[in-house]
Structure formats: structure tokens, C-alpha cells
Image (cartoon, rainbow, N blue to C red):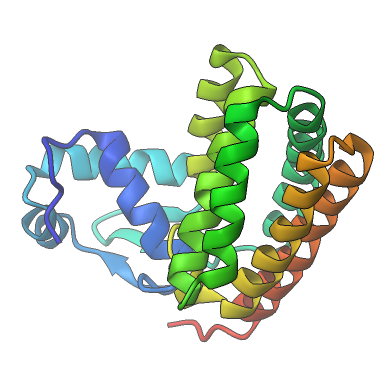
Length: 215
């Protein structure tokens, strides 16, 4: 894979972060800076910057003369992140129901149809992303939306369909119900269902992570 535009340390970090969370970079595996730079079509500088970012996040550790080694994804951190983001997006779902506009209602109906007709976990996961974007845009300020987008990058699994299809299915079913509550302007039930959806999906993801082999 080559990055589609000129990279920065953060862009390379986003790529490596997803590789680690997805398991394509396994715990114990070493990151060859030169090889990674060639793969992504960048210089070694942004790769070094990315490794520093990921070391700060506790995803890799750098050993003298041996480079960076991938650390195991901590299931407890996944659970903790879910608890925090469950509260945040429960609030977002509630506010979306309270601030429902004709445009959002139409968008949610379209997304609901996409979730119902999704032919694969990958299609469903993309529709879930569109749902999150749609309700966040209406529920919070533009500034808070930017903050949430930035933080989501740190915890989101882009290709969840590969990592845990069960988590995708739980999310798909939960989001369909949450959309129905939002469109009915039932903020309380939308919030509860959103939080429960994230909790159940995280349980599936944690189960997958615990079964991963280490190198």
C-alpha cells in the first residue's frame, strides 16, 4: 500500500495504528523503518515520527539497536475506551433525537436502508461510520465534532469486518434500533440503545483480541 497523498507522521501513525489493532502487525513483530517507508512511499522521517506517536500511546516500544516492537493490544483498554465513548455517543444520540431535522431524518432513513441491505460486514461497517458522522454533525458544535473525529482515530478499528464480524453484526443491529429511536425523537431510548450497542460490540472485539497469538 502507498499513501495516496504526501504523508506526515500522523498519517503514517494512523496507518500503523490500524495495522496493529487489526492484527496485521502482530504483538512482538518488529517494524522495519526502511521497509515501511518503501511500502508507504514516504521517507523514513514520518515513519520515525509515527513510531514516536505510537510509543506514546503504548502501542509499540523502542529497544536500543533493535528498533520498534509491537505491543499486545490491551483488552482492558478496549473496554475502558468503550465505557468512555459509550457515554459520549449516548449523549450524541440523545441530542440527535432532540435536534432531529428533516435532512437528518432523510439521511438516517437512507443509512438504515443501507444497513438492512448490506451484503457484507464491510458494507455494514461503512454504513455505521456514515451514521456516526451524521448524528455527530447535528448533535454537537463544529468544534466538538472536529475533536471527536480526531479522538476517534485513536480507538476506531477501520476494518472491523476483518477483525470481528460478530462485533459488526452487533453494531449493525444496534444502530438500526438506535436510528429508529432517533427518528421517533425518543432521545432517552436512543441513548440507552447506543451505549448498549457499543458495549456488546466491544465484548465481541475483546474476545477476538484475547484469542490472538503473540510472536
